[in-house]
Length: 156
Image 1: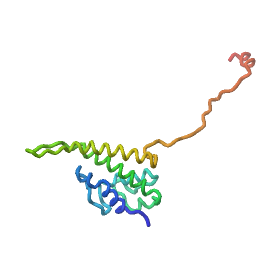
Image 2 (image 1 turned 60 degrees about the vertical axis):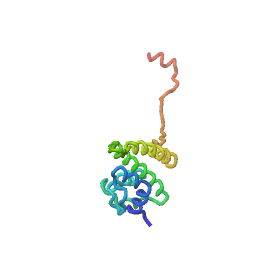
Image 3 (image 1 turned 180 degrees about the vertical axis):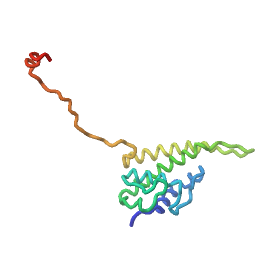
Image 4 (image 1 turned 120 degrees about the horizontal axis):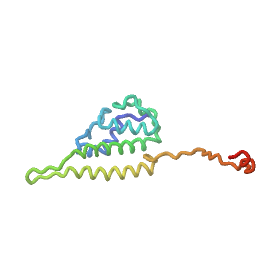
């Protein structure tokens, strides 16, 4: 059975829903139309070598090429991207104080930065995400021994 966008959103909302809600993003919708999860899911699909029909609307067909052995990578990379989105939203939050009530909303951004660092390290270790692939090639230096007597005669 192929993975669906609703399934992906369900897992991601379980992982980051509370954080999304805290920073003003949609931390509850799991009907396949969560606008705040489109970018994380789309980026994760592209990271796995897939493509999306439209960058602003990921659909079930976009997930069709993802094999079951790549589900964890898809979800982990999408979670990392979702945390980065939440961090961007959290940086706009300010601390407020009304009478005795005080909200330190800027601490959310600091916590998210730590979570992102941990998730980034995990995805690098498990999948090599974020690391440049190794490349190999052939380097020709064109060194050769020349008959020095011949070279001197020609004036080289």
